[in-house]
Length: 278
Length: 175
Ligand SMILES: Cc1ncc(C[n+]2csc(CCOP(=O)(O)OP(=O)(O)O)c2C)c(N)n1
Ligand code: SF4
Image 1 (cartoon, rainbow over the protein chains, first blue to last red):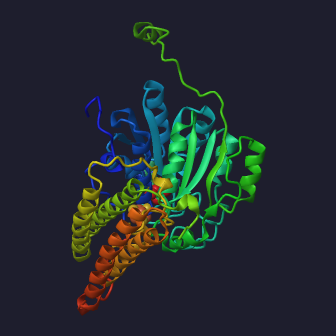
Image 2 (image 1 turned 90 degrees about the horizontal axis):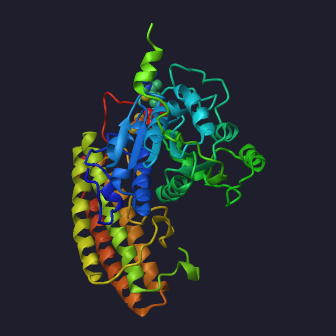
């Protein structure tokens, strides 16, 4: 990648030449479109952005974007991204993945990334299923979804509420978009990237192959009753309790100090090694 | 469509900024769909989308030609004055699937072109600027031609394009 850019980049310029293998009709295409539009709108040089993911269909997204990318280990996108941001605070770090990646195996990282409040943007493409591994229930799957052979009577346990967990864990920006409205997602992403601190953006992103019934989501999504986000966590908690999970827009935004190590060496490697000598 | 004064297109540069994005995004979407169909081995529909992207490209060039030497406004993606979530000629991704046949793909394209035509017709009716109304009427006539071409393709379709394709080993058999 060249280190300087003088030409104005269009959304298309942020797409790589690797063609997505996603199923035609997959909601994740809309997130790809939104990411490229948001980056072009912000005019971010490609070499100053990193997109970090875990494993899943959604987590393939770094390959399709022409910024630095890291397609890591299942559930560990946030761990890798926080390490990167700690070492390279100058980069705009965007983390992306699915509900399986982020809320099952990566659930603990999600909680602690929210409370650590590093300046990151985390996009979860939520299709309430493990798409890549052929349609098993995820933490956001409804308890009575009985289409997987692994859970023939449905998972039977209440689904995980990402916004509630994010709020309780200390996230400072919480929003939700819908893949039927890529420009709406782009707008939320611009806000999320500009927000200093941990921004969590859940995107309702249908899996056309294993959850074809999600095609109906476009009939039931609606904006949050309140247009403006609140900065009051009590008010945010009330909004989350009143929400049917299908509201889109910005829910919560507040400013608290961002955690960022100062990256000043306090010791020498030799001294550290000395401590391990027996 | 929205007739609020704030949603009317009031100048030629503003109109051309809309028209260029509409045409460009339509081409990009058809290209994306053609790639996607190729990846999923639906070569007939891939070829159709590729052809539509090619025609779109020619039209996009014409529209861009109108804007030569003109300074166009920078509009954020979410502030364009159409009432559709994306630009009106970009087919909605959720409407396609890898087993779609030629008929379904043509109906999808017809729907997109019709939305494009309706957008231009709306501007031709509502813009307070006479030059914008004139240009929009010209673009409406062109889009009407595209709509008619797609209708005739649909009418002339042979049996082969009628049915959705079959996959004897579909991916959505859960394990
Ligand atoms: C450590 C580990 N455990 C399990 C898997 C298998 N695996 C791959 S992707 C995935 C879940 C994918 O679901 P999600 O993150 O929701 O993404 P989607 O495919 O739905 O976009 C699982 C369980 C793995 N790759 N690594
Ligand atoms: S399996 Fe589902 S999530 Fe994966 S690419 Fe296909 S539609 Fe998208």
